[in-house]
Length: 341
Image 1 (cartoon, helix red, strand yellow):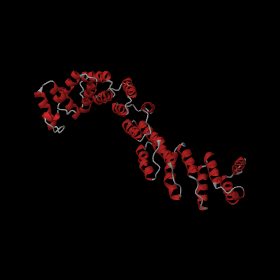
Image 2: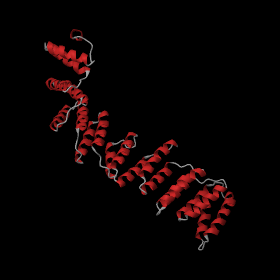
Image 3: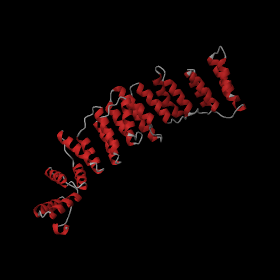
């Protein structure tokens, strides 16, 4: 019934807005309880004013209702913000309302902040939009995917892709973009070119979950986009494949990285040696172990123990003692060769 009353009011062919609005509001205030006790009718009328573009009248109505002790809903106020933000020069007005309304009893929500961020980004005030993240969290309504997307779009528009990429990483850490393929597709849609660090981070997460199929897919996508694998890329792939006992792939990537002048880190050496040992490829494992020692990197205690036993069994006491002293020096064992046996 309230909606019908409002419709009939706006169907009148000639309206003096100032006079008609005032009289209609008075009628609305004093008669609404006759056909419904819900103050939602005030929100409805406010939205009608906003929808037809009577923003000044909508603001006057807001103030009028405030004088009666009625604060319009945050959804209605969001509707006003949204419509204003899409108007020429409306973004500045949005900022004023956004600052003023909380003092009048309106409690902004996530949608409100997102609209404000959109308005700020349109004005290329992206840093100010990002600063709202902290304000949102302090009020218990942290930024959502829309919040991040809005600011990321703002940074992309300004050409500040590194800042946009940092926010993408933050989204992933917060679990907003868990799927690697979706994340990469989303970044490309936003015009953000993922770099080696982004691809490496995704591959590492998949390796931790022992999902080498997904890891390989990310690696191929990386190469397909023309992003050059770096030293960290190869170490991640080698460690992942070695732990999954995919030694053919691990050795392939090791050969490729050496050809490009990259080197294994200690954890990659350990994983690769351990994988080879499990496959009984003793000579390849021994060669890598000696190479690791030459480079001054420390093998795991387990690997030292294996080569201590191996040299002892072969009767190579000099190497056994050398490895034992080396392991003790590096605080890996505290036993003599006889005790070790």
